[in-house]
Length: 237
Image (cartoon, rainbow, N blue to C red):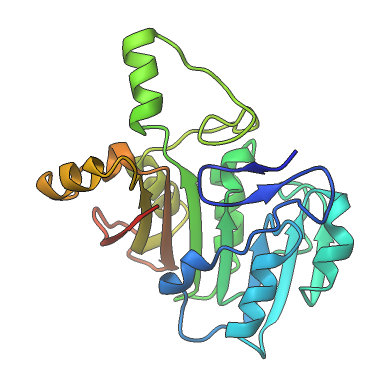
């Protein structure tokens, strides 16, 4: 069965051909101008790694994935492939210009520790792009407030394999705690029904915290890692 993770088009099934086969090209505005070494965590079947090769043709790409069924497809998209538990492996750690953590940290037992040990090996100025589902989405909050239900599903924000849940604030705090300075982000909001667009405009776009399925943001390794606000680009779907 194919599913979409966190509402942002990451498709998967039990085979490598469908497992995380969607390229995350919405991150294009967040990418650095240059990247010689790239780490793609939770790379799935390698669609995003393959897409990054088009943008950085000379880059060395290391892809890490937990699902062994994706190994064959992934090896065709990256220069180095490692299959195993992200939190248990050490061999992929090192110096990178760009690190992708897309729909992966919320699945880890200790995302704070995992992200920190990755960041520790990066040079100053390296870019880390993170995507996390938004538990403050109105559909989740309404069920909890009105019905007292906190229901898990096989996909989406309340994916039963998510071990951690984030809001905009806690997502950014995860990055700053690891030694990163968030610089820019993207949120995907509901375009249908159409009136959500109007409501959000009149609310000065402050409803992103309730309408966003997911927060996708870029951070850089910096000595001054604390930053309260970043610009968000709104995308309607």
